[in-house]
Image 1 (cartoon, rainbow, N blue to C red):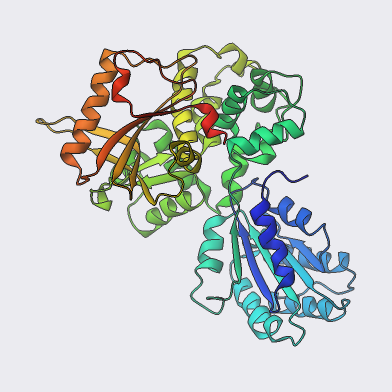
Image 2: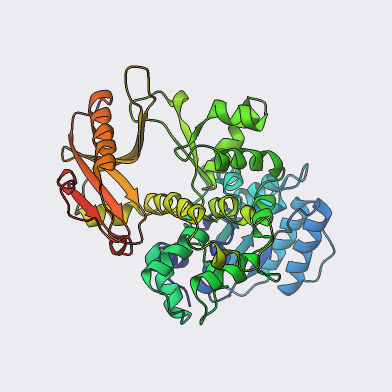
Length: 473
């Protein structure tokens, strides 16, 4: 049973109703459910389906392609080139029964080996044959986890595939609400605070959630997923990056810099200094691809030059890996249960909750009653000087109705309390933004918390508050 994904299913099924040949790319990070969505939507009924071989050579890729042709009912030898391989696919299609013919090629980026000319052969197959068929019956769906490759080679191709896509679907992780529905469908007895904690660890990745066991507490589930001797996700971190990037070592150096850096983010120059990587086009590409794959975010102050941008690690699971898994130095199989109330655990919770809020902007807008209001969502920061305090606001919502919402996001086990010192810190942020930004809108302070805010003497400075339940809408 598919949880959510109604819009994506409708878009996929609409391909069957089109009168022209259709070429659709489905992309998104590893384990987000792309393959499952496509197979379930079409009830596993494909004229041809194939999955690339991870880190396979050209010979291995072509052998696997032949094997998929054999599985579809064709007898043939191993092709020598991709041009030959697609010629065999044409023969298979020509011999298929009349009607729409769905061709599903999964993990297309893995098939692109050096000097293999996969894209040239795919272009020839699509432009020179599939779209020229009188029957107009071809539906080609390509899929891949290497989001940066899909973007560069398919979505933004400057060659023969330019403008040839008829549909593109970016599959994003589940929201909190969808994870709650997933848990209910699996008969997991989880309250919303439980779902939140698991979301801060697993993100909205269905594959990770599928390993949760009913009858176990959150801490027990986390221990069995990551810390026990037979933990299913013990090696997931290495697999995640090594499958996505052909040379992941430098990508991981960048990620590690951000995990060790300031909570607010670090600059390009700071990453270069700490990672000891060389500046240039390759380094820029690493940052671009990490951002495109959803592991990091780059943000410049709304009124500051792009060269002053900060980079921040935002992937839930990666953040958990560096802040928690790597700290299990003694290989404690009950690490999560034993550190549940530690100071480091609470520090991680605070940072992870901020990331969850940034992943639920539509829900935040709905809670404020401004879903239909045009907004610019950004961050803002100003570096301190001898004369002025610096400030950073992770979430700023500039609204077309003349207001700007400045957000504070706080994880708290109980009602969150604004004390004298924190009230002064908030006022400093408001003053800094008002004095240093170029934004002339009326400012509203909004606090997002797990359990609400205590209405004490300092609460009056808050214009709106959003709670965990709002994020589940």
